[in-house]
Image (cartoon, rainbow, N blue to C red):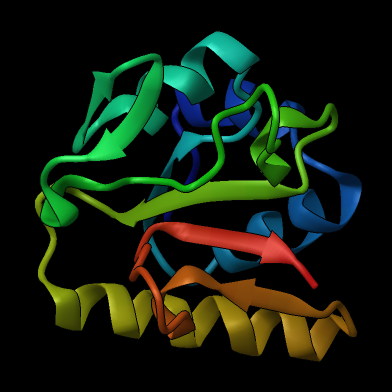
Length: 139
């Protein structure tokens, strides 16, 4: 039976109780790791800078393919910036370099688990503007 590593358990502790409920149920049947839950404004801003450069005091997009987030953690907060976190990033185990197909399989299982538990969950892979396959957030 799959189980969470110590690192995943620590990240899970920073999640909203509904996310904890969903993920604790899902791990019983599907193996995955938690790579991010809560992050502070500095961690968020570091992610925001990816794919951007500073021009005349303004962060502008330099490489659209490298954009990770549109939330800077200062002016515009992410659901990861709340404590407990209202968002979590997970990846199929055993690798961080999972295929898109593996993310779709994991997402389907996690969304079905949330539905079974009566919790509204949004998956970043369903977004139109940017695809964030590891990302889940409370709806």
